[in-house]
Length: 360
Image (cartoon, rainbow, N blue to C red; front, side, top):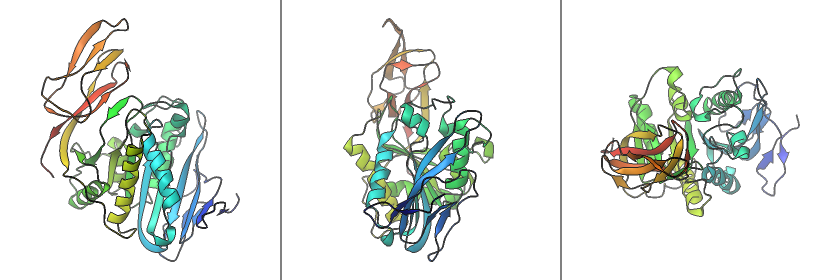
């Protein structure tokens, strides 16, 4: 393994080829020491980039591109994870911009950027599921080093990224079939301190819609989502959604990037205050309406719209175009997303509706 060495016009940026996925977890640092991911070492005031290796097992292996920015001063460790679903591009592009613009000399603490958590899905342009094992990476935490590739990716991320972090943000962006209005998820665990710090992350990120999830479980086997895997380890965490239909629209990329800078200010990792946010709409009990059959879906609503109970979300038609059945809202609420492309398989989402609630 070669030592990390500068390869950029930015003197604080260095890269290394590989970070062994089977090595011990990262070593935390104080203000006078480096932050180490196996052979990848970020000295104070330095940015290094490389790959977490996911070894081959029952199927092929992969790797995870990451950057570690070690500030000159002491502070928290913030992990930002993009590309869990490979078709969700705005957070991926936003983290590349943050990497290019951040100055480690002005940073307190350590920032971990997971640029593309699910490289097989990204390269395969697949929604939801890995093209290798058919699994949803955001449903298999804490992972399994002996499992299929999605389970092995989750295992590496859990041990190498979530474990050493003080705060975790899982950044999503409306998959290739989801017409989505930006919002974020915040889970209520019943731990007042943990919930308050997660709430602080959610408000600081700066989106105007927050979905509160209250169905928390203390059982580790239920912590299958990235966010819940972090919360289960006592780490404040949120899940953001800034994107739609696989778009790379500048507004959506900028929204995700703005959220990152707001988080860094909120955690006192850089100077300044988070940009002000319009009044937040608080939602709860987000319910995903799923297709009962394999068919085609014709949406009748737009994301962000309010819908009455029984209101028409869209219509399922067969592959000849003949109507099968209307799909209606289970209760009055806000449409978080609706499927915007025709094909749907049995059991797949058609829309998500959430109830309006008071601020927690």
